[in-house]
Image 1 (cartoon, rainbow, N blue to C red):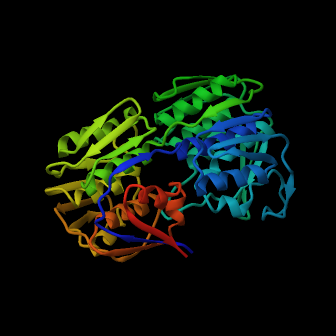
Image 2 (cartoon, rainbow, N blue to C red; image 1 turned 60 degrees about the vertical axis):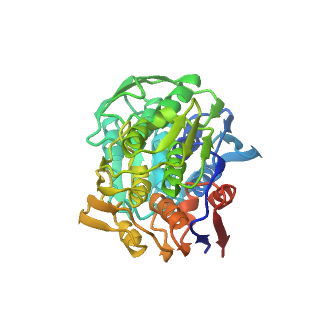
Image 3 (tube, helix red, strand yellow; image 1 turned 135 degrees about the vertical axis):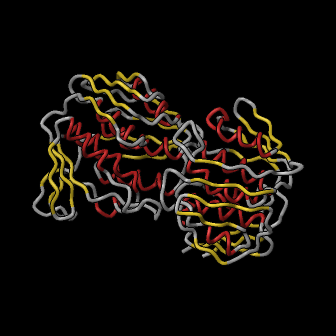
Length: 433
């Protein structure tokens, strides 16, 4: 196991580049199941979740070749048909490997394309980090596949979906879900007739995926709105896909700069228009920042003020930025209410901030009150999940003394070479085994 050792209070300044979007890049690997021609993908973040997606595609018979840093050629021809060996007792057909499915939640994205192209797929319940593990039902996916004509059987801990031919359907999502929207959008490309998805997520990653699929021959309209229509086709071509910048990483670096408040930080290779909810907050709390078409500049501010926030689906304030905003509010003057509306357990990490010296009161599992301004102090910590983990890194950077953060695999799932990039800004941070 590796850990991070961080000596806090070092001034941060300089330039840092944003990587390709984790959530956009993850989806190109299941998309490859639908395409027999090669795909060249640019701006791919080399992070643990992407490595797991690559392993899944390879396990199913695909090929992944690294051309150079951030550039990969991927191809899928015919699957290896497995029976029994992966845990699917008495099941024949295409089985997603249990070991990989248990490692990351995004494995659910492979189910729809496999079902659409090959008429069957078997898989265990998807795993992932502690946030949402066991409490993120996949009913949205299963119910939608059944509406498209698939038959579901559950036995020996495995789901098995079969369909002679998926049919277009009118599907209303009872809950706004990015992965369900993307999964059904991909799956519907090979269904007969037209599929209408309602109450869809509207994230930029969904728009990017739809644009790429359309460039391959798909007929998708409405991506980025609550209603998406997909007309079924018979085949998709390959092509080139450039991954959009990671808006969560851009927001991470912007809030890190605001919390440290020690020097000018220039964040490049990003899309500031994907973070409008954050800029509204920055205006309210007094952060000194400037935006350009593809960069963000954050300079020291005179005073950071407290401000309440409520997480919301895009284009609202992203739940993936809530942990970082909570850390920022420990440095603000006044009290702020943080209301997490998306995930039940995402505020539990605030107990760790309290151990570091933060004044945080938990009202209920969805709300905390942060009373600033607080001095934070270094501690021995464990990263509970990806977003809380990187928030603890930011807390350690502004804390007095030394902090050790264990279980940094969770951070590596979403941030490429984070310690190296932060050292370039002046942080005293090192990775040890």
